Image (cartoon, rainbow, N blue to C red; front, side):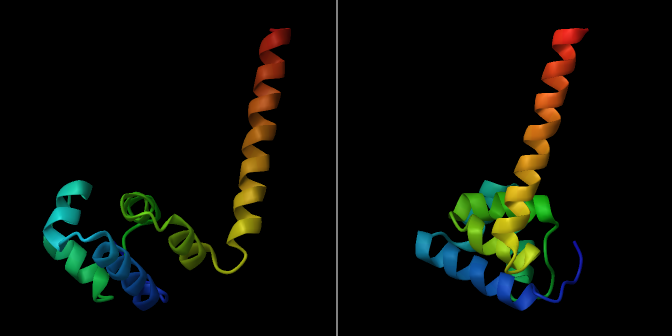
Length: 101
């Protein structure tokens, strides 16, 4: 875990999503297989999870878009599309190479 400039916003997003889902910090911690103290520290902006943990956290709470925008900024939709296109291109190339090999 690391400190992050957007930790306050992320903590608020995740806390609000957890409350809206009706989950306690203990329930969320169990779903993520982490300690409840980590949930508390993230929600109070004392720490931020790494990208992959935050992604799973957001998936559990159904707030993926907000978390992606927090990590990637307002250009998140463009960045995600570019990443998807790059992966599609690589997969297509590998598939094509498999045909020739």
